[in-house]
Image (tube, rainbow, N blue to C red; front, side):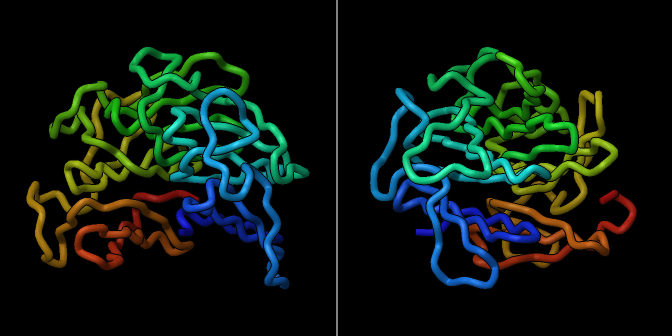
Length: 240
């Protein structure tokens, strides 16, 4: 059961949820190699050689793989030379669910910027945290930690993209909307599906899951309960 996917110049990475591993394909080959986890072996928080369920993956400019191991409440980094059963390094969370600054509660989407700052969508804590490289705790940069629908709050967020200016684009899943959050701001602004209702209308979402931008600034959203992908034009919002 494939989950998230990440494409670099050389590889295609796939989070294989059903097998509790992450596989990597060379673009000109059909046989994958396991880069994280052990095929078919569900992992726990006792070690990083195995993975529980991986919702999201990210590969940085140095080809390091980041795995959002949401059932073990942690984000783990694996080196470019990693293979099946090799341990990784815990970058965020401590393996125990909780809401203090060192803990995560069902981390979903992740993003790593050019200076290796990790953004974690801490879904069941209704917040987004940043973890600086080497940090032992995170800092909340979006949401209050309380489930809500105001523009200062999030509800079970699921995914994030960050532009070069530090603006965060967050899938606010429980509120079925997309919010844009400026750096150092206490509130976001809704940029897509801002009606406050869930339906199948063209400008409405119903429990969206993920988002991505193309090079023209168009926003693509996986509209989960509507079984479709929606495209929104947000031309003045995104800086690559």
